[in-house]
Length: 379
Length: 100
Image (tube, rainbow over all chains, first blue to last red; front, side, top):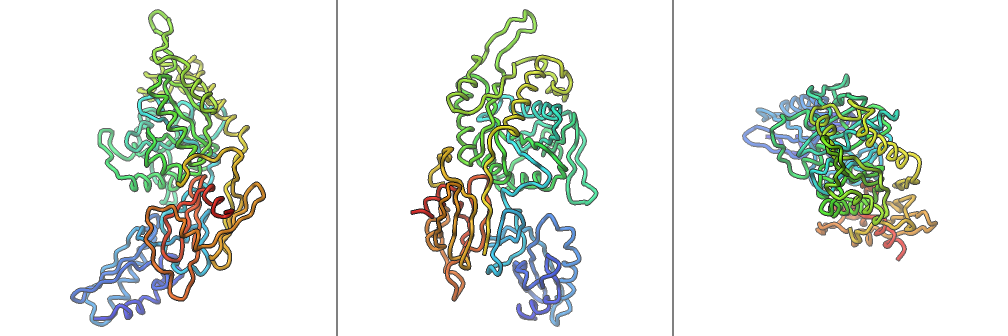
């Protein structure tokens, strides 16, 4: 049986995952084990490039099999997140030349910009059931009607609503490069949702790190093309997933959706506090289900006490973006996959969203001097 | 995060982060004109990570910073040659470390 150093020597002529560095020097070999003439070797690779790694895998197998005393070789490619793995990722991450562990790739650098996407905004709420996704959907279509190139990323992995709201049934396909998923375009908006990939009534039971990795893929492995704004529909609450998005996406700002009653506003306040903690500007608060107009008698009722979100925004010193009513038309069009801004753009209800979208656009592009992230240099 | 409150509008914001002297020194230039630096050693001691485990740096090498990665809008993650790379340093923490 060959020794481990003999195996490593045999692999010196096989290029590693980057196609240049010899495999033993690439740091990608995760482990070598031998049993009864069988050699097992694990090589850490970037999961996004798994397909291109087949020739390397075959070359490794051939090189090991050629050694005397080896009956068989099993080469496994592992998606790397082994402890201590260092990345040589591009973008905001800088690694010192000659750093001691020039390992293979790991997850892409966090917080670096997404190519082609100008501004990323999060639509969030402190609690569920306040109409966050309906608002996100209508705002996105509204922004598109204002002439912007808009995408929607449904990050509410546990309760994806965008397929229903946009009335999208088809599944996304792979782009011509075979690497990136193509978002589905409807009502002038590019949409991507985990809901496209799982059945309506199947539950997604995921731990935090899996959610983080899925989000990263949706941000970076989707062919968004050129976008002025990418709207991320966040899951409700202020927990792990929300923080993950704030860490992984360079957010230009966040919109908080709340109903006007105290119970909801308390949680909206938590949402505002969370984004401030991670230095993400609050673009404003939207009051949803602001009031109810009876379809029979036309009388208006302030079911949740109208105006609460405006007061809260004033108290917190953040902009108030506007209000959308509790209205049958919005509910019906949302459930029917024909969002009101697209299906009834002249209605008062659509106008409410368009007003909010217009204020959002100016908050995003005209005011607020954006703070530039520091440049990082390694000497 | 050591101090979770967000930066007030007038609080200093970093413009440039520079690793110098083969990773032994971390220099920060802030937008109020202040330039401060902190040794890798002190930076490592002040790591806000819950994982405080410590291994010696590679034999014959002093402790050094080997990577700096942007985290969201508010911090950087710094990796050292002793394998520790889970500390997330907010702008405010960097300010306090480089100027005190």
